[in-house]
Amino acid sequence: ATVYGLDNESPLREGMPTSATNPYGWSKVMNEQILTDYCGSDKNFSAVLLRYFNPIGAHPSGLIGENPCGIPNNIMPYITQVAVGKLPELHIFGQDYPTPDGTGVRDYIHVLDLGEGHVQALDYAFTHPGAIEINLGTSRGYSVLELVKEFEKASGVKIPYVIDPRRPGDVASVFADASRAENLLAWRARRNLAQMCRDSWNWQQKNPDGYAQ
Ligand code: UDP
Image 1 (cartoon, rainbow, N blue to C red):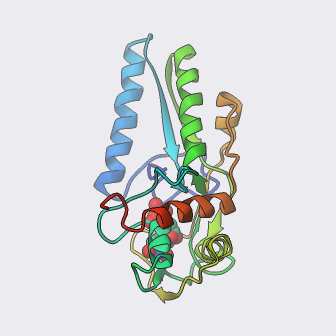
Image 2: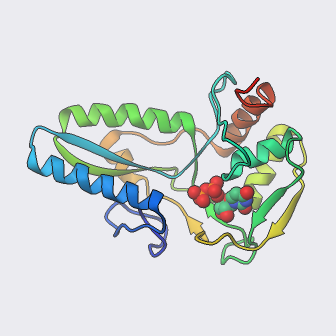
C-alpha cells in the first residue's frame, strides 16, 4: 500500500493515483506498471497486484513469525521485543497527529488473512486475464496507543513507552477500502486485533531470540 504515497486520503481505494516517497515505494509502483503493461500486451497473462496494509501477527503454532534483523523498524516486532525484555521501551513516533489520540492510525491485518488473500487472488488470476490492483486490509484503522493497549491485554505485559517526534515520511492515518477484495475475491479479513497481538506475542515468547537460537 506504499504505492498510495502521501497525498491520498484514507480510506484508500485502488483507483487513486500512485506515487512513492522512497526507492522501496518506487520499486512497487514500477513493478505494478510493468505487470500492467505486460498484461496489456499479452491477453493470456494475468496479474493481481496485491496492496498490503500493515501485516502483523504470526502463525498460531508459534513456529513461524516475524524475525527482523537488528532493531525493528516496524511497530509490532518492536513491541514484542520490549515485552520480552530485549528492548527497554517503545518509542512512539508523534502524538500530535490529527487522529483521536494523536498517534498514527494504521490498518493492521493478520498475516494469515493476508495469506488467504493470496490464495483467493491466485484463483482469480487463473480465470481472469488482465491486471488488477486489490487492497488487502481490514478497512479499519487503529492508533499506536490502541495497539499498545490491545497488546497489553493479550499478553498481560505492560509496555513502557516514550513519545518521540514524528518519523519523517509518516502520515497520520492509513487504512484501506477493502471492498474490491470482497467483491472480486470473496475475501475479507476475519481475524481481529486481539488475535494479531496474541499470535505475535506467542511467537516472540517461543522464540525470544528469533530464529538465531
Ligand atoms: N511506529 C512507532 N514506533 C515504532 C515504529 C512505528 O510509533 O517504533 C508507528 C508509526 O509512526 C506508524 C505505525 O507505528 O504510525 C506503524 O508503523 P510501521 O513502521 O509498523 O508501518 P508503516 O505504516 O510505517 O508501514
